[in-house]
Length: 286
Image (tube, rainbow, N blue to C red; front, top):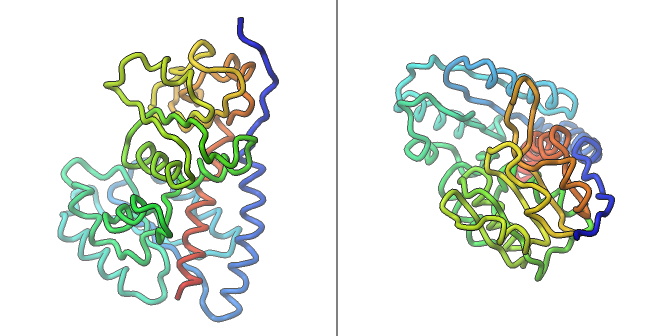
């Protein structure tokens, strides 16, 4: 019989407010020094969900004091045209951050385009050079926004520091799962990465002291798959019947976990702030 505990809520909205206050002060200092921080969001096509995301960045940027410009190319833009534009943005000294919004249209391959993003302005660490620095585990120029949000929430949790702790990451995408695994390794956790080919997933998740789930499968992790006292960070965001659902069965797992993020209100609010944190850091380096 499992021991039921009351989990600490890892409140992403509250953490985002704290981080935003600090970034607002830093942005003000930059503007006073004549170096107003600026982010350009490059988007290909007019997907409504992508536009909603861009609008959220515009709103947050205005709150912090970061100029955010949205540029849109037509959905049939060629690879060369997009790469040429990214190189121009990289050469503009008034721009500190460049974000190429994904997903791209099917005819565009991110692995062919990402090297055209300036390494010094690549605020979501998409350029392979910045991904490589992350793999080295020491002083990367930028930590991608969502993985950074995961680590910031863990730093605010009872599981921190994670040195020596058993951490399990469910999901291996280059956007979330792989970078989170690398960041946990850099923090000296003992890391297991699970994915679609993993056999007996529950055996691994039950061993976790820290569990990060980024599989995109609503309700994948149930109470029977975790051990009492685990800290859970749920990165999943899937709309099911107009309701946003995470990868963790929140109500039942929260009765067992020591700490857990909700969906919505966990990783999401911290992610955009983490991106802006990278923009400020880039401006401060210039």
